[in-house]
Amino acid sequence: MKDKTIRFLELIGFTWFVPVVKLVSGESPKHQLQQLAKMVGVPLFAIVVFLFCWHIGAAKIITSLGQVPGPTQVWEQSGVLLDEHHQEHEREAAFYERQEKRNADKLAKDPEAEVTIRPYTGKATFIDQIFTSLFTVFVGFLLATLIAVPVGVIAGLSDTIYSALNPLIQIFKPVSPLAWLPIVTMVVSALYVSDNPMFEKSFVTSAITVTLCSLWPTLINTAVGVSSIDKDLINVAKVLRLNYITTVWKVVIPASIPMIFTGLRISLGIGWMVLIAAEMLAQNPGLGKFVWDEFQNGSSSSLSRIMVAVLTIGIIGFILDRFILSFQKFFSYDKNAVIR
Image (cartoon, rainbow, N blue to C red; front, side, top):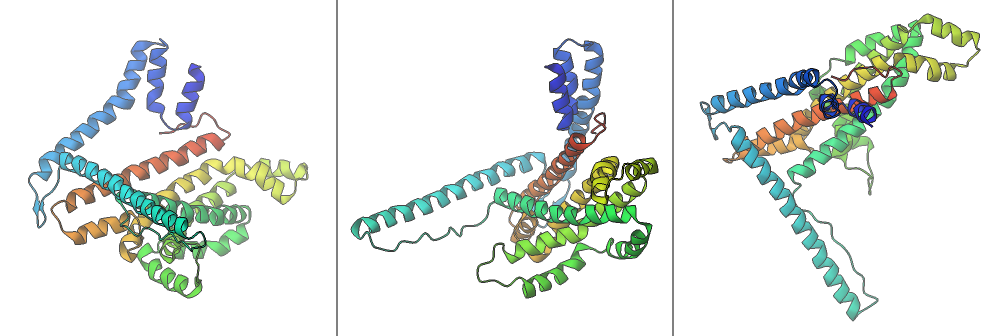
């Protein structure tokens, strides 16, 4: 049971709880306490020092919107945002309940009457914006992965193809999302025309922008990983007369998984940053729009709400990074890979 628990914690990236499990099981208490202090105590101490410096520094900075909020004010505002989310969804539930009651009364008087349900058009809450951004970055990152990994594998197996693609990669890799966004917006507006679109244009624009900016690290790392695998593995595949697809699936990808996941990890981090910038610039729904709206609002609580959003963006970025590392641990043939 202990070993299964430890493997599960390592798989999901919660390695700092491993000493606790070992300590509870009675395994070398002194050593486990030292490990616990190193893995949990030191980071907690660093966080406390950061919060203290933040508290002291914030009290000395006065802006046009008032004093820079400290940790206490930001924590209180996070509770306010959560309460606003619950209140908004209660209003939404009440809105649909009133419609259902009205339609039921209408049908009771006339069973043949036509009834409709109007959609709720209330303001998206902070929590709603979080899920909007998460869904957008997931779609953009998935599209980038589906393009980058196959192209990277092909480029890594062929020096000719890599030489052909390398100039294009080096040209487009450093292009800012702020430069891509106007082009993507105009192209999507011209091509994505439908009376009943499956997705909003704002969502499509943000997702494609994320794709264009985040596919390069995965493509490059995949190509490098594939090109640097042991040539004996390729020779063995030739001796066994494996076809191209089987060689790639059974030999090339497993051998280059660490480099592929390194690229995925970098790509997801870039995609998350790109998305926030794109949402701010294009005013597309999401956390970026929330930050910009609060900045434009200029109320006494705006700075605190922006700080809540900034910390939320950082925490989500950290969780996404852990998510990719956990996938690497799960799919990698090297089960001893360490997640830090």
